[in-house]
Length: 84
Image 1 (cartoon, rainbow, N blue to C red):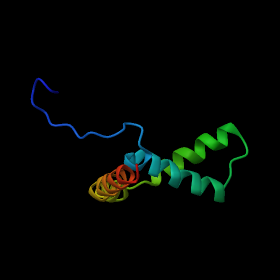
Image 2 (image 1 turned 135 degrees about the horizontal axis):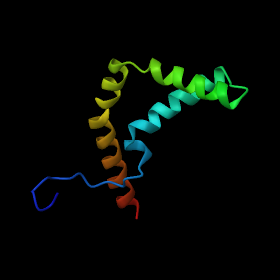
Image 3 (image 1 turned 120 degrees about the horizontal axis):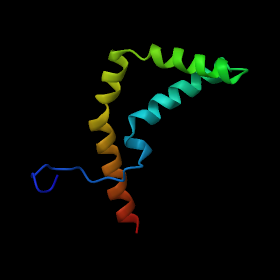
Image 4 (image 1 turned 45 degrees about the vertical axis):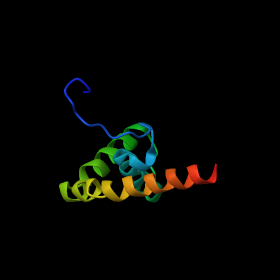
């Protein structure tokens, strides 16, 4: 990336605040808590059904939250640096 002058954002790759999949998993867990599976087969089926319910619009809206997420993480990081 550096050789091709591709700018990269610097953040911890494991930051759950910046991971869209974490939000999707959270939503899946909420549904599973309301409708728990009793077997592995049933769990797989329910997870697939939940996954299939994520609409393109839901995913688009989730992606559109990235600027706010970046801002919040940046502000928090600066705040933490000020406290040190």
